[in-house]
Length: 334
Image (cartoon, rainbow, N blue to C red; front, side, top):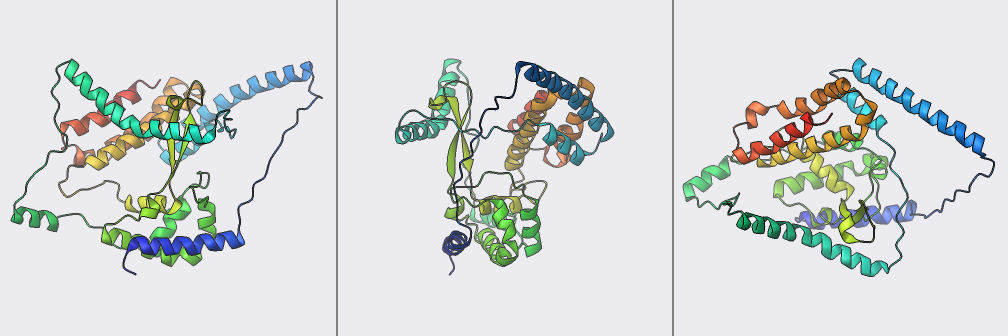
């Protein structure tokens, strides 16, 4: 069986059949009843307790940041503990769900087209000249051969590499459309590890990412406003667990290389990671003073921004603009 798609399909069929037989999905309904014993006096004391708790929480996290100054791993643990718990309450829809799903789908697939259309209109309105960021280049046969010989190639990964990546993955992530959580993969890891390693190595060596790992479930995440309006939601893509494992394996390098050393993918990945870090810091900045925020941003954001900058700083000017925006964003986070 030479095709990586066929191999992944066979593995998924066997694995999901085994899970359906031995660990079927069950749906449980949890109900919470109101407590009539909570009087007005008790509620007032609860509010007082909550205020004191917030004050103590702020003092505690501030002291923890100062104590662990310069330790990036410890600072991230402090930020994760300070982040508010996500609400598990799902929005209720009054309209027909099939009609809503079709409306949301049409809106989500049109976002990119509308953005490109508006960008073109804006450029024409202000007489701006823009160029194709990826111009086509015609190579001679000798140049193409040298380029092919100099291309970056993946080395085969050992089972221990795959095991480490899977065990390091957080267990609180939502499962994909197959409803297979990472915790289930970890429990079965010793039995499926050789097969997973072979699938990932075969995918990289053949330069083919399996179609089954590209399938995803798109879940609308409400923003502000009426949640039944498509424009008030952002799409969240839930990819298969094994797809995430393959991506993490491919990112073993701290710097993403390409054959032309343009570092386009590295800059995009770096900017996305910096933006995610800054957004998490913003969510907990009310717990810290300005001095403590400076410590966190220098340890978590700027250290990542300047890491190996001597390697990729010679890239195109338009690539440098992205981390420059993240640096400006970090400077305004106070």
